[in-house]
Amino acid sequence: MSPVEILSLLLALPIALNIAIATYLVARATGAGTAGAILPGGAAVATSLGLYFAAVAAHH
Image (cartoon, rainbow, N blue to C red; front, side, top):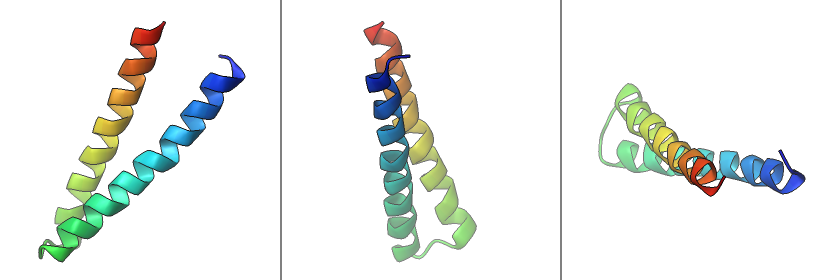
């Protein structure tokens, strides 16, 4: 992996974490419990990282 790819991966992880936190907070604001809010947050992380890895794989 090139240094640019490593740095972009390191940037993708905090972005995915921010997406998860935002999704969790929105779910909590709508009245979901903690466990019910963690599930959409995890799904948002999996989706965003999956899209990132698919884009990296398609680029090569």
